[in-house]
Amino acid sequence: MQRWIALWIGSMALAACAGLDIRPLTPAQAAGAHAGDGPAGYIVYAPLTVVEVSDRDGCRAGAPFQLPDYSKPYLVRSRTGLGRNGVDVAINEGWMLGGIKDASDNGAWLEAVGKVLGVRGGPGGGGAGGGSGTAGGPCRAPGLYRLAPGASGNIELLPLHLY
Image (cartoon, rainbow, N blue to C red; front, side, top):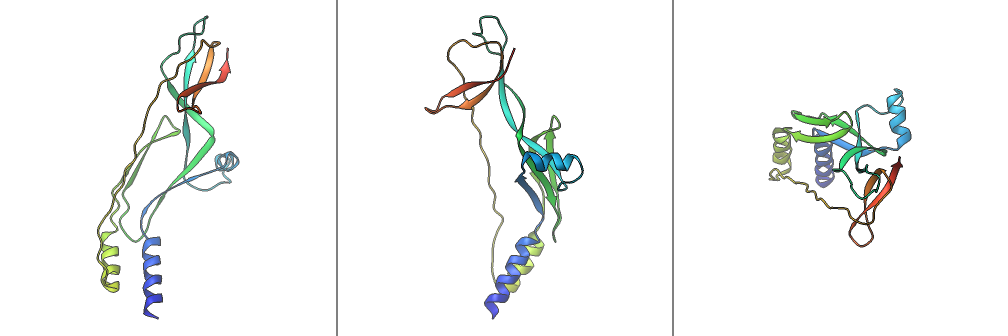
């Protein structure tokens, strides 16, 4: 019986923590949110890395830049709980998730639950990394090309909009 009570208290404590939810949406759900029919929160899009080939012979590509990939929307929503919520979300250029700073403090609540359960714990953390690559290959027709991973680990240029 005590075990079930401990499991219930533990699950309620984890569910009550403050934080940030990021979940994928379908393009239809994102369109519904813009019309007022969707979930509450901020909608951001996955970045689509693009280069422009602008000269007539098509052998020079400009510097890569990013556009929103409207086929990959995400919902970002702050969640309050029993602790103090201090989540700062940076949205760049009106569509891209620029950064997350979480200063939530659930320690007092989790410590109280830990005392009831006789458990000790500490805060944890994580991180993310990134990478970059270069594109190469034959001359292309002028236009916009998106960078995509190739089968052999190289980066390919796929036509997005030709001029």
